[in-house]
Image (cartoon, rainbow, N blue to C red; front, side, top):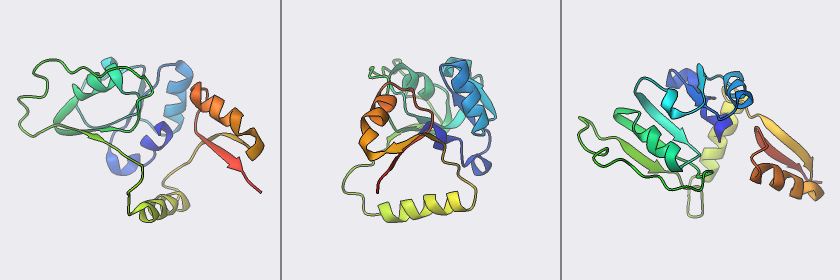
Length: 161
């Protein structure tokens, strides 16, 4: 998800990428982030949108960065940790701030439309899809290991046929 988050930046305004390593920060910069930091604590101004795939403490800290009317999209929970919001942090904003969980499971009726829109953005050069691993179907265990161990930058592509 991280690679997609900064891609449509031209329509979104300023993009700040968060990555835990120097290599990761360099990578988000290459993907188009205006600024790359190692954690939410380095962000000094309120933000309008957060796309979080880490969850836990990072999600809670990111919620605290939202401007009035801001929105946090929770798209993953790689940390495995609890997200504990400080007492009162959900009160007192002139326009509500929100956390939205993104569910990409069964029951979605517009998957085809979503995929068509993503493919159109790729075809128009507005969305880059970084591929960090590519291999034959019989090497799927290698792809799963790379994803599970968080060694992969970009998407895994399996060649079938």
